Every structure is written in C-alpha cells, then in structure tokens.
Image 1 (cartoon, rainbow, N blue to C red):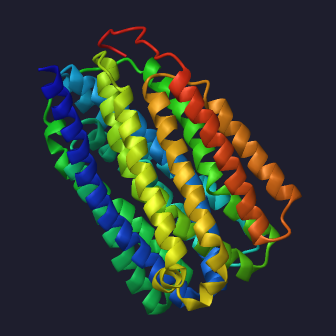
Image 2 (cartoon, helix red, strand yellow; image 1 turned 180 degrees about the vertical axis):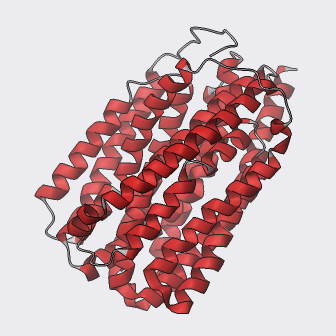
Length: 424
C-alpha cells in the first residue's frame, strides 16, 4: 500500500513536470524566436540596448515572481483544507491592490528615466516610456498564475505561459519588422503580459462567483517580505552582470555579452517549470505533514540532466547554436556559451534549492545568496578587463554558492509547522 502510494506520487510528479515542461518549452521556444528576430534585425548595438532594458525588466520580475510564489503558497494551503472561499478572497483582494501598486510603479519608472538614461548611456527616451507601461501588468499576471500553480492545474498554467511566448514572438516580430526597433520589442512584452492576464481571469471565473471568506493577512505579508528578499537576490545574480557590462564595456561588447547570457538563460528559464511543480507539491506535503524531501531530490536530478544535455549540445554544436539563435555576427561569443551553460545549470539548481527551503519555512539560507550578490558586484567592479573575466567570476561564484546551499539543505534538520491553524 505504501509502495503504491509512493509510486502514485512519483508518477504524478513526473506527469505534472512533463505537462508544464512541455508547454513552457513551447512558450520558451516562441520567446527565443523573438530574440532570434531581434538579434538579427536590431544588430549588436541595438540588441545591447534591448539587453539592458530587459535587465531592468528582470529586476521588475522580482515582484512578479514574489507575487506568484506567495499566491501559489497560500492557494496550496487553502486547497489542502478545501477552503475555496479563501482562495476567492485572495484573488479579488490581490487584483485590486496590485493594480493600484502597478500604476504607481509605472509612474516611478517614468520619473527615473533621466537617471536610467545616464547610467546606461542610452539617449532615447521612448524605450523607457514603453517599458513603464509593462509595469501596469507586471503585478497582475502573477496573481492568476499563482492560483493555477497552487491549485496544481499545471496544464492551465503551462498554456498561459505558452501564450505569453507566442504573443511576444508574433507581436514583437511584427513591430520590429515594421521598423519600431527596440520600442517594438518592448511593446510586444506589454501584449504578452496583458492578454494572458485577461484570459487567466476568465479561466478562474468560478472564484468570482464564490462567496469570499476573509483571511488574516499578517502571515501573508511576512512571507511576502521574506520571499521578496530571496527573489531580489536570485534575480540580481543574473541581471546585475548585464547592467555592469553595459556600463563598463562598449555597446558592441555589451551586445555580445547579452547574446551569450541569453543562450545560458535558455537552460534556466527552461527548467523553472520543474521548480514550480516542486514548490507546489512540497508546500502541500509540508502543510499535510507528509514526506517532501524526495520531491526535491527528484527535481534536482531532472534539472541536472537537462543542464548537462544542454552543455553537451552547446559544446559540440556551438556554431550551429549561435547561428540558430542570434546569427553569425555573434560568433565571437563562441568561447563563452559552454561556460554560460554550466553557470545557468548551477544557478537553476541554486534556484530550485532556494524554493525548496522557502517552501518549508527556512530563511537563514538567504544570507548565502545575498553574500553572493555582494561579491558578484564587487568583483565585476574590481575586475572587468574582458568579457572572459566576467564569465569566470560568475562561474566561480555560482559553483561555491551551489555547494554551500546543497550542504545546508541536505544536512539541516527538517523544519516543522509551528501553527496548523487554518487561518493565516
């Protein structure tokens, strides 16, 4: 009986991972077709500008991922207790509050345009204005995705992610080919956030008909604050380097670096779905006081296998990869893409371990990641003689960070639920 139950759970983990991974992979493919068009038609200099703007967007995804993970966490809790009224309350209140905050964030970006232009050496104002419009939806889309993730409806979540990628590619390609260049590329991201949000609200329409059950918000805010710190540290690891390279190197060199970094991020964004499935399942098992550690080990193995496969492919077929994704004008990045594959595989493992720890209420590990951020920025400021030197800094840092976090995760005793009260 026990073996049957374990086999069923393992089959469920594999099935859910396969569904979300496949749909996310299709969405990611569309996303990289967007970069395929952008790199070829914008060229290294404009693509470097786009890379810098996308780095700002990566920083804006800190609250995006924070909101999605928080909503998923508490949706998972309410689901395990069959409290749909609390899920309905969570959705409605979150949408109202986040819409107001999104408008304020958009206004803040517009106010900071002179500072951003000066630091990034970008003369045009329009791309930043377009970027500010993305902020209107950046706090709304993660609400519907968090609910889908918490409900473990990975098919619906995957379709929503796939739609985002399709819109980014189709709208982006149309606007870039129409001559809107960087503005068109950023404009496509607005559509890729807005439309999936609207459709996501429609998919969850039943919760707008259910009677709301009010919930206490103190624990939600505390958890959100912790998660915000964690995701800030994780996101800065793969975005701070791009901003610093744009500051210290020529526009062409920054464009080359952005392209190499992009190829590495294929591995990270391609395996995020594995962490999302793990997080939802570990959270539910944690609340129900069931075993959850094997879920983490299985997830790490899957991520590792995907990363090793990508590294082998990047090493054996580097010319083909570069030509396929960014074009032969980016062939100078050939020496770096193998290392970036290793960097982002290790980072994907760090990311997964982080979400495992936060799902079982561990917090102290975040100090390791923040320390890594500080070292990354300091080392790049002190040592930036070449692109290769930057890549080696990242490789060394992420290797040490993975080892420390893995040892911490494996050997620290499991935390226990302190309060099993159904209200939060």
